[in-house]
Length: 198
Image 1: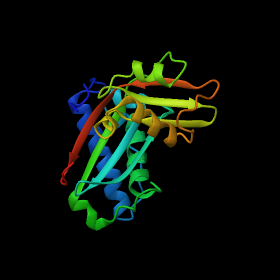
Image 2: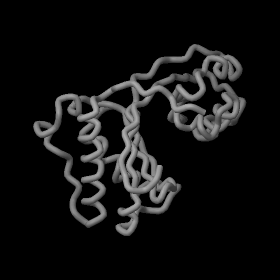
Image 3: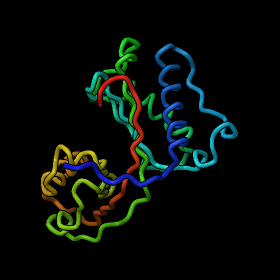
């Protein structure tokens, strides 16, 4: 499946700055130093604004952590370092990053656009409204919430399969439609850097 179109939420230069911040936080954590968020006066103005982001780490091409935030309550310049360290050491699905992994480490930051509600009252209607390869999707029912980035379409190109796996991630029974369920779409700008192949 073709990659999804990428909106420009930050400039190329600001994106490089975010990658620098994520790598600096990882290098500090890997060498036992305290991870300190940068002073906001030292970062470009666009990175001082709150935003939603995910940080994904690969070692030699293999997934080694992915953690994100949907709260949008801290500056991007602070969020990316915190999320990078969380992805490296606190993703319960994957092993912690080791210093030896640094040489083959690739860092990916996905910046999320504002979310747009999807008007649907059931699975078939929701599936019909999705744009495979393009939409990131978040669903929430009560305290249960699940999110897939647009990249997930590469592994799950059919909307029904995509939704079934998203329901499981949210802790919902596939095929169920709890009262009050809300679905929304978003796009991502993907920033990448590293030595290992993505």
